[in-house]
Amino acid sequence: MIVTFEELQAFLAEQFPQGARYGTLEKLGDGWAEMKLDVDDEHLRPGGTVAGPAMMGLADVALYAALLGKIGLVPLAVTSNLNINFLRKPVAHSPIRARAKMLRIGRASGVGEVFVYSDGLGEPVAHATITYSIPAKR
Amino acid sequence: MIVTFEELQAFLAEQFPQGARYGTLEKLGDGWAEMKLDVDDEHLRPGGTVAGPAMMGLADVALYAALLGKIGLVPLAVTSNLNINFLRKPVAHSPIRARAKMLRIGRASGVGEVFVYSDGLGEPVAHATITYSIPAKR
Amino acid sequence: MIVTFEELQAFLAEQFPQGARYGTLEKLGDGWAEMKLDVDDEHLRPGGTVAGPAMMGLADVALYAALLGKIGLVPLAVTSNLNINFLRKPVAHSPIRARAKMLRIGRASGVGEVFVYSDGLGEPVAHATITYSIPAKR
Amino acid sequence: MIVTFEELQAFLAEQFPQGARYGTLEKLGDGWAEMKLDVDDEHLRPGGTVAGPAMMGLADVALYAALLGKIGLVPLAVTSNLNINFLRKPVAHSPIRARAKMLRIGRASGVGEVFVYSDGLGEPVAHATITYSIPAKR
Image (cartoon, rainbow over all chains, first blue to last red):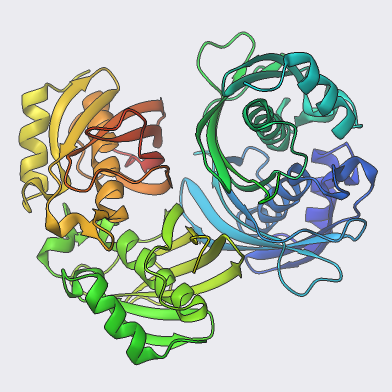
């Protein structure tokens, strides 16, 4: 891990000026990160459940955090592929949490997986695998 | 097609009270739909490009529209799997458009594909395949 | 787990009369299974590495085994979606092993993930998420 | 297109010495290719339907052909991600055909989509999106 929790937190705040809409960094480890999203009305969809894009966005930024913790603060790393399975209905107004872990970091790309949890449920509500493209010169 | 453009437009407006944040319905055909998203600052990410979740959200709702046009206004159809490849950088402040087409509609699920375009670019900026779970009783 | 190791082994042998080409069952637990494939020349591709389809086939049948261990010997459960990321080059003539685990088993479908390992390497060579469609009457 | 049909055919025959098990090249165009697989007993699975790995293998090699037709005969291009949706049951003893088309070819990777058809059915039996990693020096 070549980036500290505080450095990454500051970087994400600067990079995502929309504020906490994509979630906040909770933990950072060697190749993994956890982020939390406080679900409010803008994240809900019909039936009172958390909207898919809110979970996808949280998963995406959580694994991005896990990657940057390993390779440094490279703003130009971009998502190239995201695959997500929605497993269970989240609790409507409960926070959701993404636990993201890199599976491989190569020269030009990185791949990892993310489990998304809903506070109050033991089993995950979604699982994603995501690939980032890493720019050549960094 | 058992739902009209106007019926679907009204249904989406009611179901997604956040307004046009996920895009607006532009066209509806037999098993396909087109939606448009006017990109503003909240959809941008570092580097001035359109954020992945904005494209994922638009793709998801566009194929949901294409599905509902065929099976009727079933609010409980939910996304079960989404796979997206990001192909090119969209034009930063240009609208994005999703062209969604169902590939199969079965008893319990439906699968389709979506191309996302950025106004000003000929080639697609993203391609998604999405599966919806359709509730048993409808 | 409502099926024993021996019952599942016999079922797979009967269902896949091509023999061990898709691998052999090594372990079976509550919602998980391990299968092994002895790599021979027919599984190799240019460069002496294990062909992608050999890894996909092993992952697919291993999670199928994990699913059947939970729901019973339902021959009509079929794969509806498979997503695989190839992470590292396997050792050319080493056996590969798939560790498969169900993430959710619902009424009409089941989802799980599989890590594929190559004997001699600590890190996984591939990761897959797979969805099966489960027939209505069983 | 910088490779001819005959050159690519010869290359595939050499690279895949298992012979026609993965299919034969039928057509080659600018960024697209078609391959055919004569389904025999070794490709079938329980219920008399074509096995998933046979369709995955054909899709994979067809898009590989479409890519090589554009970038030249680079044996080290390898599949990094494959996502496939199985849409319909193929006709049991009918040939299957893959129509593969590149969506983007970049410096370090290429992405495309493949529709798989079963002779005798008008609608596709499977749809795949596949990413290849292209080696740096070529």
